[in-house]
Length: 458
Image (tube, rainbow, N blue to C red; front, side, top):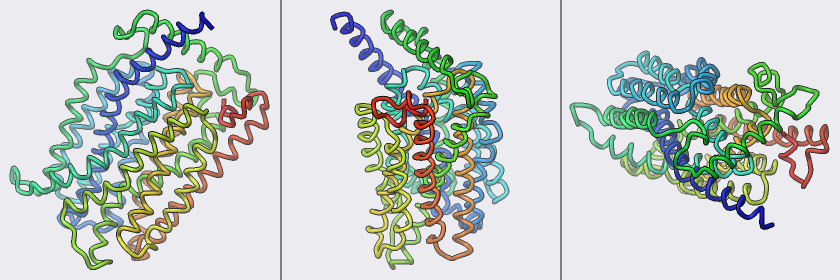
């Protein structure tokens, strides 16, 4: 026990320094990233839809075409990050998307909106899977759920803080001779460019190069990660050899493809809410004969995401302390799948937002835990490609959620059918997660020790 105590102390301080030094900065990058990609959802009900004469289907297509651009370069971008290093590549991505986002200030037709949304996706391609890969390469798997949970807090907090910020900026109608929604696009774009420049100097590609770690901390992190990667590469799985570090392995892995479908269901729900919640709230005015100011709508949009951030934090802490289990992902998927179709059946705006809050909590609780899974059995180039491939499925869901939700709203005249579809996809994610864990635990009983079903995914 005496020999283990110094090692435990070094482990604690190393993980704490990574949590303090890297995670908040990468989370801030993610905050700006998510704000830029969803800014269109605040703009549409606050002038942009009317100014550009957009139907719900056109707005849905404009929201979703971003993801088609992202898909085009996602896997190549993550492979480039693996080759050139996160510092250079993430910095390049941020500056590029900041410039494209800035151009939304002067968009004046639906065609230009489609083009810029597609180019924004191309510019942002690889950022999210690159950030996941980067953080995964800094801590061993037993600490990954906690680290990714802290990182993922940026996503719900983007709406908690970003919705009122967007409302405040939209309220500055006439600044520089611009409509309020154009003012918003102008000022949410600049931080991406500035953070990209800072990231070039601030980020470090690997623990061995971190001068802010002590020699003992650098050695422990380097050795722990090397040992873990060697164990993955040495793991013998006769079905698909998941741990080999090449592109072919990731694309040939059945587990990766099933995880991609699981992620599809979650992201479909995430972006159906992200893109259309402000519009649904705007519709409360006619539905319930009430009136909201721009800031009222912004604050109502933010309501579901603050509890979601709190639930995310404690859910990932529980998974870290007690072991990540299949129900940490499947359980929230069931709750979200059941709750979302009920939202528009409520009799008041408050009840509707309360049910949507349950759905948001479910989605955000599961996502960081989910992202700790791929790196359990992939390493090197296979990890870069596998994570990018899974996120590509999410981007397909992002496109589908935006376009299909808008199209179904125009076709049916309401959001009931689109939200039932969200519920279906989330329940699909729960079923697939349970099936995948059970299948692999049965196939490899030795990996199911300590009653840890998620370990069967190794």
